[in-house]
Amino acid sequence: MGMVKSMAIVVLILGIVGIIIGGVFFGIGLSKKNLIVNRMNVENVTLALDPNNPSVYTRIDNSSDAQKAADTIAAHRRNIAPTYQDLLGGKKFDPTNPQQLTYVQAMNLENYLYMAVTAFGLIDIAMATGGFMIIAGLAILFLALALMRMANMYQKTHAPA
Image (cartoon, rainbow, N blue to C red):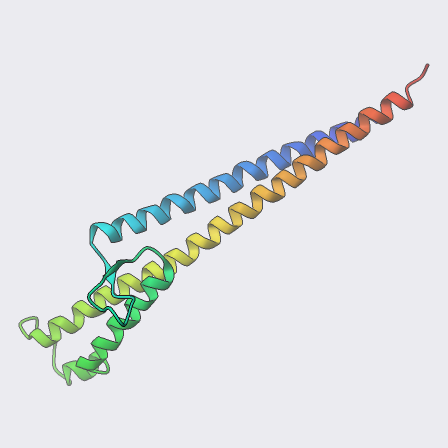
C-alpha cells in the first residue's frame, strides 16, 4: 500500500501546483486589467452610452465599452473619408490639413481602443484559465487526500496482527 501513498503524494503535489499556477494566471490577469483600466482613467477615455442622454459620459473599463467607443470613432472617421486613401486623394499626408490630422488622430484612438478590446479579451481568458486551474487543483487535492485516507484505512484493516 506504500505505492498508493506515494501516488497520493504525487497527486497532492500536482493539485498544489495547479492551485498555485492558477492563482498566478488569475493574479496576473487581474493586475493587467487594473493597469488598462487605470491608464484609460488617467487619459479620461469616456463614452456616452445612453443615446437619450448624450451629455453623460461613462469611463471605459471593459471590453464591450471599448468596442462601442472604437466603433463610434470609426463611424465618425468614415464620415470624413471612407478610407485613408480616399482622404489623401493620391497625395501625401499633410499634417497642416485639419481634416487629415483629425482623421489620423481618430485612427490612432480607434486603434488604441481596439487594442484594449483585444487585451481585455486575453485578460478574461487568462483569468478564466486561472480560475479553472484553481478549481481543478482543488479537485485534485481533495482526490489526493481521499487516496491517502483510503490507503490509511486499508493499512489499518489489513495490518498483520
